[in-house]
Image (tube, rainbow, N blue to C red; front, side):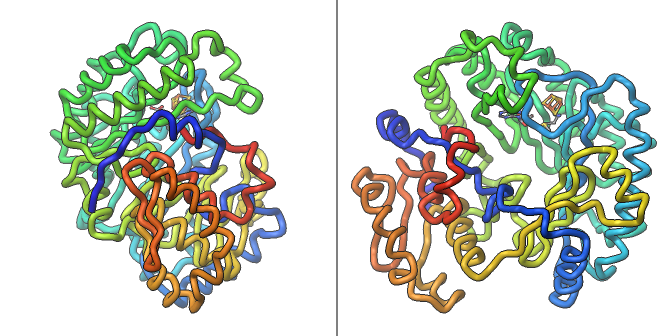
Length: 459
Ligand SMILES: C[S@@+](CC[C@H](N)C(=O)[O-])C[C@H]1O[C@@H](n2cnc3c(N)ncnc32)[C@H](O)[C@@H]1O
Ligand code: SF4
């Protein structure tokens, strides 16, 4: 398949509106409190009957210092002791949830995200992995995809060795930008030496995939400064890049108010940065996976995309569509069978429920037939940029043209703009439409109209 992108400033400006990132459909906004412990248990039982592997997501919310731009679910504290009661509850939750899932279900994918998982001491991390192994069927052949988000400012060679021993084989490093002025403006000072030594240690320890997180749109960034950051990282060639568009929503994220609005790059500069990123990474041999992600052509994300089995979940793009996703820890979102489930967001509420022996679920949604159909369409488009009507018709026993009359009409102007080709067989997204894939998916989102203003801008 053609994995190239075409950068058209005029088109991007015209289509620049807020939209979901479709890590799920329906999006997390549709989760409601009528779905709780009882409903989740029923879905787990149903999913056990169907069987299949599992993916586990653990949320470790703590960070040592705050980065002003941060929109993640985190708790900032210098006191490492704060992690202890949380970890004790997390272990209880692992036991509670582990008892509900059939023990024959192998954990093919595992991810620790945050916050900052490396906020934990080695002993704490070891306890967490040991307890998980006690209650879930973890793989011991290193063939699972076991990944962790690491903050290089608090990681060293020893940590990487320990993480590898615990069973991790993939790592994602937070960086954002190397420019000293930008780092100061966002309260995240991180040296090249720290970053590259962690990357080198990961490779030396045999981590199979390395990812670097960058953000464009941060204060004081220029096209040239960001290009310098990018070139420095390209010299060490990580397997993947996540290059996020800075989501500036100070009304929602208090610490973002410490960012001086006048220092933010203009929309034109942001676009120019993005254009340069696309060019540089393509020249360097990376392929554009979609949304914020680039990968080397032999990385499994790029391979999965070429082979047609890429998937999207709450952690972004993934190769494990067959897994039920179990969320553990505060704020975590899971997908089990045909339901999405979210845990409570506050530590005290988590503590209360766990210590009553309850699952700490506070929201969820069960998909109806229309949701499942639209999810299949959106997932196919956002992962593969190509949709065959026949495949969907067969899977859902519908006539695509009859079911999606309004949506197909809405795609006509996008075809005229060169974003895609509509034919009697299906929808093919063109190079110019790949950066605007969210806009194309939005056409199939029936919940969107009333929710538009709650999402970040597409580019
Ligand atoms: C949980 S953090 C990564 C791990 C670790 N806490 C660290 O910062 O090194 C996940 C990533 O989300 C991205 N991120 C956080 N806030 C963002 C925002 N407002 N807009 C875009 N990306 C953001 C950053 O790239 C960050 O590395
Ligand atoms: S970017 Fe990472 S380290 Fe910084 S505040 Fe967010 S979660 Fe914490």
